[in-house]
Image 1 (cartoon, one colour):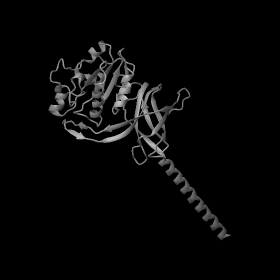
Image 2 (cartoon, helix red, strand yellow):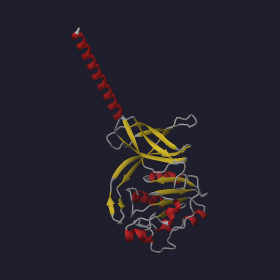
Image 3 (tube, helix red, strand yellow):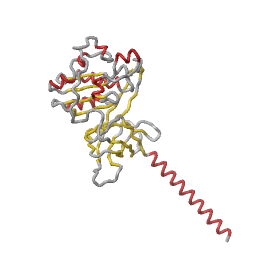
Image 4 (tube, one colour):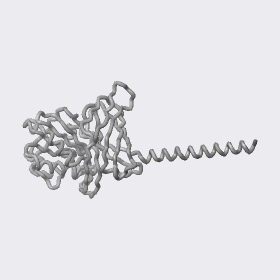
Length: 305
C-alpha cells in the first residue's frame, strides 16, 4: 500500500514538472514571437492623425524591412466604439548620418539606419487609450509574427490640428534681418526658406510647407536630417512656399546656452522639434510631420497639396 502511494506521488510530481516545463516553453515561445512598437510621435488627438513607430524584438533589436498590418482597439469595451482594423503601414528607410547640435551649438556625429512604419490619416473618434496590434512578416525575424503598443488619444493637441487654420505668424525674414545667421542655424543657409512670413504666404493662396527646427541647437538626432529633407524638397518645387523657423531664440541660446521659445513657436504651441506643417491653397493644415520622417514621406505629402 505504501509503495503504491509513493508511486502515485512520484507520478504527480513528474506530471506537474512536465506541465510546468511545457507551460514555460509555451510562454517563452509566445514571448519570442512578440514585438513591441516604439511610438515616434508625441501628439495624437481626435480626428485624423499620423501614427509613426519603430519595431523592437523581445531582445531590443530593431526589426527593419518588415511588412506590417495594424489594427486599433479602444481599451474600453464599448459597442459604440468602432474598432479600426487592417491598416497597412507605409515603410520608410531612415538613413541618418548627419551631425546634430547641442545647447552650446557644438555638433555631434550620428549614424543610424532603421525602418519607420507609418499609418497616415487614421481617424480617432474617441479619446483615451487604444491598443495597436501588429501582424508582422519579417525575413530577418521570421519567428516574430505579432506585436503591440498602447497609445493615448487626447481630446485635442497642443499644435494646430489637421483641418484647422494656422496662426498668422510674422516670423523674421531676409527682408527684416539681412544677416540670416541671426535667424538660422542651417548650414549652408538657403535664403529661399526665409523670404516670406507665414502671414504673407497665407495671403498668396499658395501651398506652404513650414518647418520648425533647429539644426544648431537640436535636442534630438532628428533636427539636422529632417531640416535637410525640407531644404532638399524646397529645390524641387517652384510653386510651393517653403518657410524655416527656428523654435529657439538664437541670441539667448548663443549667449547664455538657454533654450527659450520664440514668439512664433509659442504661437504654434510647439512642444518639441522638429515639426513640419503642410498647408493647402485654402489656408488649411492638411499634414503634420513630427520628429523623424524621410524625404520620400515628405515629398509624398507635398504632392497631395
